[in-house]
Length: 115
Length: 112
Image (cartoon, rainbow over all chains, first blue to last red; front, side):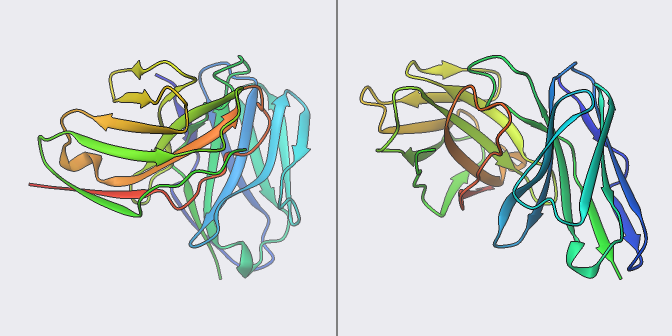
């Protein structure tokens, strides 16, 4: 079974703090993704990575950065947390194979509250 | 990606089959049908996908009509733990680096 783990289920931070969200997958997947999910807005892609040290901006990258130093680990960084970054953050990974490329495996999510 | 249409909600008795429909009348020849679900406060979970043949795995069966304009996800013996929002997505297979776009989905409520 594919396993995607996220460092925290719940996190409370103060405005202006630097926040690190960690994601680890154990299936040697090339592709990894960070989404945020908000009521009424669905899933929105923040960043994705298709290889170590490679990253691509998604639909809403402002205020975020990412790091992928190892294949299994993809980190999301909030440089200076703001209240509008309060959200559920979801990490996912997927294999590159045709037909399965739409198959993304998600972690349990991190619910972040910025005060 | 082709647009999908799903009923907003469905009810199912525990132990009975849950049949969740999805309409994707504008699907292209190279687009697959994927199903995911999201249980409250958890991350989405991949269920199954297919191109044109029916598919079955340990979680569910996927029936795709011959013209590929609609499909049905079947949970053969629904349990209370299957209560979730179910999403039908149509997308090209090799879009490895693109986001999944979830619509509103179908909220399935399984009751005893």
